[in-house]
Length: 195
Image (cartoon, rainbow, N blue to C red):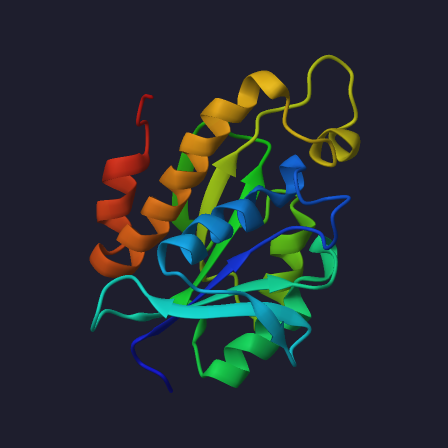
């Protein structure tokens, strides 16, 4: 087991059609982390794109991963990555979109239900436990009568993009702090943070 390694997974759907949609905000935040470490994603045999690096010299190793499959089938690739790299569920962080949080907000937690999020449901099933960390990135509820499935597959509005850039940096910061200082420290810094 690689005791200093963490697997950080950004949820989303593959391909250019989806890369700027609300559902892919987890992968967008993962891109920020990869840029900070000057790490490049490359195809891995687990049907994922993987980038590896460290937050700081001598710090924990971060394995950043994006599945090449669709959001609802994230479990297989996450389980395969965990086995390949020898990472236990208590060292897995999943970054994902959260309808139940207002846009431009973050919450962190470990375990719990999936709240109707099919990506989380599939990961919990594949790992045989829901006890992995989650960085929940608020995208808000759809306006009016718009269907939630349509809403999450739409790009962010132009008037949201400035706040989105800050939100993605915050999600990356929260992931780093969770690794270095633990869940409580990350929650204290990011829960209820006003921008």
